[in-house]
Image (cartoon, rainbow, N blue to C red; front, side, top):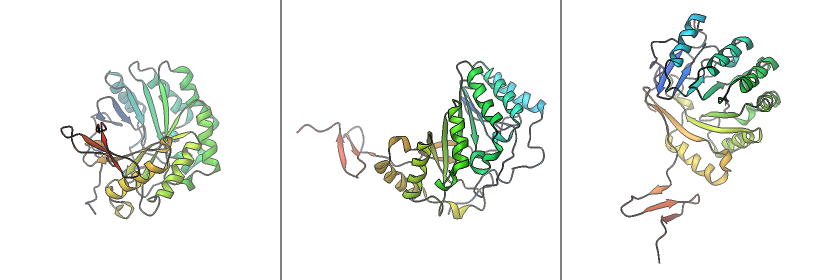
Length: 287
């Protein structure tokens, strides 16, 4: 196994402004706090969760918002942490409205595991808050991204909360971590992705597990992940296909690492592989 890292994806690549991580030109992470309803064993931030001083004060949050406001190249804000849905509804509402009022922002993305880990914590008031942004914001889009790793996590309570969010006008995407012994079979992943789509949740990312310390037993090889994606490409609807991604250690960004179906080069013409493994010349050769 590769060496495990304390900070595998470069969360240390922070701006001078507390709560902001800015690794891509057009988007930033905003972490209002580092609190979660559960401590996921495989999480790369688990050693930072609920530590003293990780919740932004009003002054610190204002500085973070000013950082975003002052940079017109920022088009998207990802609320993460910690779980932003653990914010009190009024505080969440104020934060979302403040972001919606930044003219150059087009998208606000809210990453959460709360519908899975503690759906009872999501009140009608919280869901109304999400819906309110849709009515207050002009030319903005709010997306919820649900972290879900196995079909067994989509019980009736979780399903009810997700349906309520969708009915409030907020689309949901999902992200999943590929975990050895948990979901590293085509049957497990197919069941999960189909169940998500049936709940109007679009599978977005399948993450290769990070090099977080003490998590080597959860991590597959990239080759195994690619093999799984090949089978899923052949068997599942396009709606059920996430992008298999790796967050390159050291803060170098997230890249797709799924299988490639193009072989050869432009000088001799490419061959394109179909889902059954057969190769075809492209453009087709004239006989």
